[in-house]
Picture 1 (tube, rainbow, N blue to C red):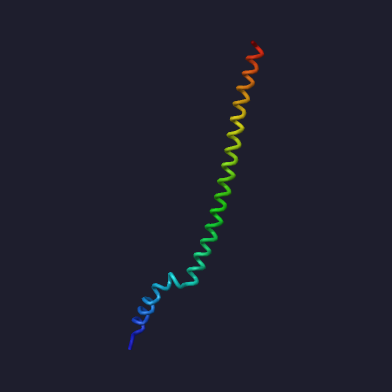
Picture 2: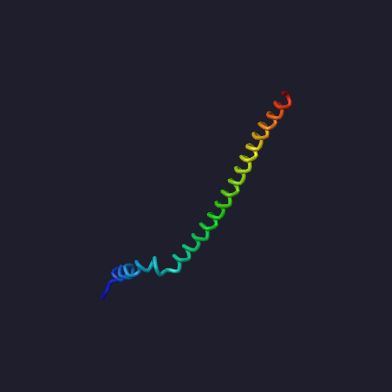
Length: 81
């Protein structure tokens, strides 16, 4: 006759491999994690794209401003001569 403790150990040992591979709850948890991670990744990508767009445009603006200054100075010098 098998004691209750021994039977419990046997069932635990037989369930060790199954808890990872054949478990709908684990699959559900993974899907939940996947959906959350997917959302964060998309949000991060969008934020990065927006940030890059902003920095790029401001850099272009400053560059344009510098060029414009040079151009204005050049014209003034030519007028003075």
